[in-house]
Each structure stands twice: as C-alpha cells, then as structure tokens.
Image (tube, rainbow, N blue to C red; front, side):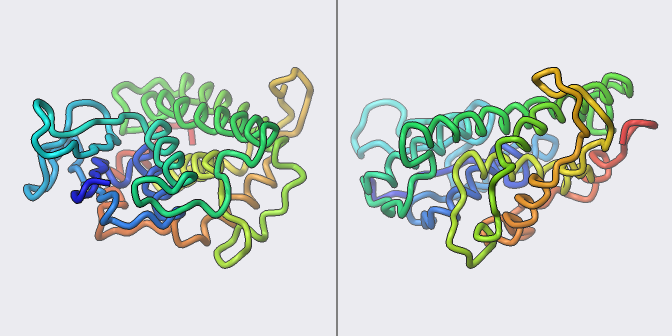
Length: 269
C-alpha cells in the first residue's frame, strides 16, 4: 500500500459517487486509505480543493491510486465508474490486501447462486438509476427541455424494474438490516438504496409507492403496482449510519439545485 492515500474524486451528493461513499462507510475503509475529494458542482467550477491534485478528466467518481515514487509519466492510476471502483475495493477487502480491512462477509454473494441473485438485483437497480435521466431531463427544471408526456412514460419504465425487484425481495425480512441489526447490505442493495434515496431526497419523488394501478409487469402479467417490500427495505436501510448525508461534506445539494430538481412539469409528479 502506498504511503499516500488513494483519492476518490466525487460530487458528494450525486447518485453515482454516493454509492461509493456509502460503500466506504459500510466497509469501514478509513480516509487514511481512501480520501474522498469533494469536487464542486459543474455549474460552480467543477474543481477540487486546492490541497489536492486537479480532478482527472472524465465523469465522476474516479479513484486515483498513487504510483510508486520515481514512476515515469502519470503519477496516478485511475479507475472510473462507480461499480468498477466498488468491485475493485471489494476484491481488496475480501483478500485483505494492501492494508484494506478484511471483509466480514461477501457483499457480492457467498456462493455461485448468491452471486447470480445479487447480480440480477444489481442490474435492475442500476437500470433504475440510468433510466431516471430522461425523467428529470423531460420532467423537471433540472432538465434541458420540457416534454411532460415523455417524462410520465419514462416513470412508467422505471417502475417496471422496480416491480421485478419487488418480486426478488418478496421473502426477505429487513428488520436485521436496520442499524444495529445483524445483517449488512450487499453491493446491489447499496445501489438500490442509492436510487431510492436520490429520487426522494433530490426530486421529492417516492419511488417505493408505485402507482396503485393495474399494469403489465415485465412478464406480461396484470399486477397491481405496489411495492411494500421496497418500502420496507428503504426504511430499514435509511436507519444505517452509512446512509446519513453529511451537509458539511457537501452530501446535500444546494437550495438552488434542489429547487430546480423538485420543480416538476404539470401533470408529471
């Protein structure tokens, strides 16, 4: 392990960096190993604090790993994309390499079947976050054009993977996921929580509610669109220390940005 900490460049309140910071807290990875470098919003300079090297090019988060002194060329090795960063760090924790705290359990599944199920949940949760972009683009003042009908249609498409997730969670008891319980989250559950938290905290939209309408699920069956297990999951995870937003660390969007995100086009919200 380098004597210098690894640097995680992040917009602290935004969804993809938020996944990584929640993960770091859950794994109890100290700042002496991975230091979060808060980068100002793109509209406010898109810059890192002066005591850190300039932010790397590319979308955030980016993990910067110092190379050995005397190395020719770029002094850092960069890993981009939130899931790539999380999985890389989790490999190190599972093996206890480079000074990272040894995992107490596998966040990716304890066996082949467990990993397959976690991968399915992860894919659906990630799909929700990605699909939210056209919702906010067409349906809120944070977007670039107002097309309310397109935003409403995309909300319906976001709810489809949420319905599939509801089915995956139907037999789960989340009481032990609460802070102080005996169950820690998986990577997939961190990504799912991050999506539900992001839409609630930033856009004022509770995606655990469902529409209460009869809709076609992903398998073409008529179902009532309600998500009670998602609500149970979200309520339990929200009690965890890792999920608490720190305003002093920039983990809450500014009032001006929140106002734009929470101003919805007529008939969408």
